[in-house]
Image (cartoon, rainbow, N blue to C red; front, side, top):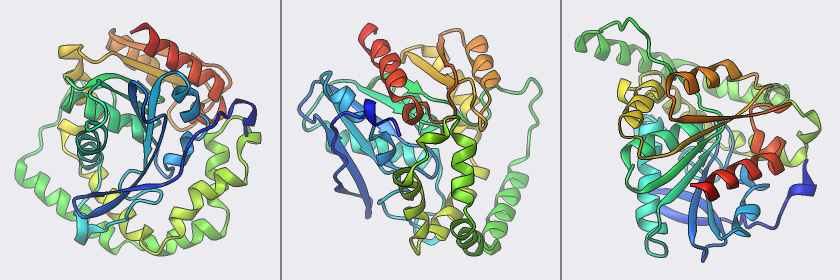
Length: 311
C-alpha cells in the first residue's frame, strides 16, 4: 500500500436516508470551497478513496465519498425493493445527495471523480445535471463507449420480452452459491491481482474493503438487481449515447485517466474515446492498472488536481 502518499482523511461513516434506503457517506474538509464527490467502482466502496480524500481536502476541496446503493455499508436492496440497479438509479442517488447534503452548505459547481463503474455514474450525472457539474474525471470509463456504425433496431415488444427473459434468468441463477464460493476459494484476491498491476498494493486492508460487503446476507439479492439492471439498460444510459449527448453541449470538461496496464478495460478503448470525442482529454499513466487512484495515488492526485486547478 502507498502509505507514503496517504494523507489524513476522514472515512468515518455518516448515514443519509435516500428514498427509504440507508446510504453511507464520508467527508473530509467539509467547510472547504470546492465540492468533489468521489464515486467508487464495482465491488468497492467509499473507503477505496482513502489515499485521495486528504490530498484534495488540503487544497480547499470538500471531499465527499459515498457508498453507492448496494455497495459498501449502504443498504443492499433486491429486486422486490428496488426493481433494478444501474447507473440511472445511482445517478438519481448522486443528484439527490447534491441537493440534500451538499447544497445546504455549498452552492458551488460539483466535481465528480469516478473509478470504473463510478466513472459511468459520473458521466450519467454530467448529462443529467450539466449546469451543476464543473468537470468529470473518469479513471477509466467502462461500457460500450463508441456507438456502432450500424444500429440494430429492436421492436418495443421484443425488447420487453428480452428484459423479461433477463429478469427470469437472474432470479433463478444461483448467485448465493456463487458468492459463497467466491469468498471461500480466494476469487476476490485473484480478481484484485488481475486489476492491480502493482501487486504489493494488495494488502489485508484492501481485501477486507472488497470482501466484507460480499459477506452480508443481502449481497446476493442486490447483485441480482444489478445484473438485471445493467444487462437490460436503456440505450440513453449507455456510455456511447451519454458521451454523444455531452459532446453536443461541451459544457462539462471531461478528463480520462487511464493505466497502460489496465487488464479490465484496455487502454486502446480510452484512445478510441479521445480520438472520437476530441473535446475529451486523455492522460495515460505508465505501469498502472485498473485502479490508478489506489495504485499510484500521488500520480493520480497530481494529474486530477492540476486539471481542476487549470479549469
